[in-house]
Length: 459
Image 1: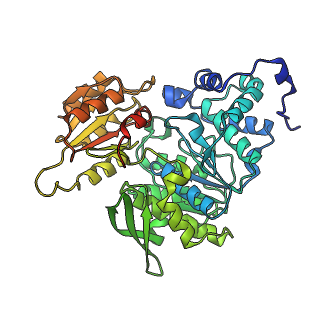
Image 2: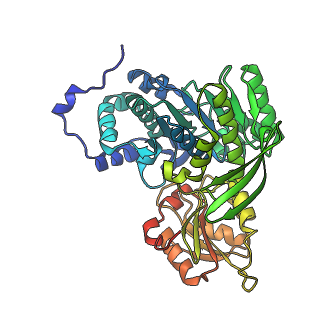
Image 3: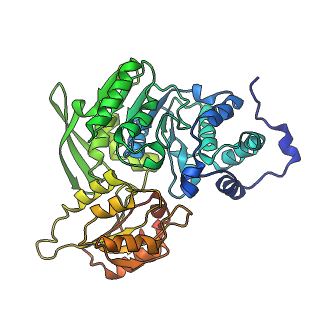
């Protein structure tokens, strides 16, 4: 029997406000972003039970499932922007959010309305008490329910963590994308690339095409190929189809030259996402579009070009090499693991001198969470930068004094601040107009930046 959540009994209860509902979600349910691995339930039973009560909304619309270590969010937002530009009503589920819970659930770039969040949570309180879901499990069910209500044509779904046992892994997608495999969440996914790859390969479905992105680890490619072969899932290596060979930043956009194989055609793409690492995500996105075209989804090169140039505007995406202030530049990037930090450091190593007269200085505002490989990240950061250490206001955060001490042992010297905005204020006092201020190390630190305070100039 399908559970009807029209909820006639609501008339007899006091309905929470949106603010009360969010407080309830954050504190009543185990939340990974706050407490870490203790919030993870290593099976998908709760999500299955919740969605069964809702009438399995996840089967009411086609989906694209995107997993991987880095680049999931960028890939999801670019794909959603392309599908929306092509005329499809597009759902988008991502995590975590930066500033507003509703960022996680969007339709055509618009966040789920506050009353919808309240209505859903009020309707499932009985099930919350019975099933005891985590915050993420409930949020996934909310997204699927909302997408069904909105009659989306397709939804792009980002894996939360891993893949095999992730709550999102109850969908039967049109296409799976695994952006890359790297070192992250080893305490949950495993201590070898092979173990991590096996967990992430769990989103590969029988006879369903899967795209793999740019992997630096042959062992990961081997595992993904082996799993795809067992499931008779067509495997497409994005790097063999679309290969970036030139990029430059100009006029606030990232221009990428891409060679398409086997035809050898050259395409030029302009992105409003400025991180150089986007060249690899773009490869996966273009490979995905190629597969979608063969499946009957209609999109033109003009749709793709427009969407890539306007991804942030179309989807509301933020926090990835996001420049919020000029003279000096303040850049926000949620990079927090080995591969993400490596790409950032590489990009900043190419900062040109200021008209050959002054050497720009890099000011790094860094905060991390306790369950990351902090020593590895610190070992990759430049000693020449000026550091401002901070922490987010969550239990998982590495206390600023401990992070500063670890950094000091690596030769990274700087000041300590309890709040990221205090750190930015201090960096602005010290930085020259041609310097760069980078805020990184944690989604949660970036999420606490008061963007409106610093976005006072044309950016």
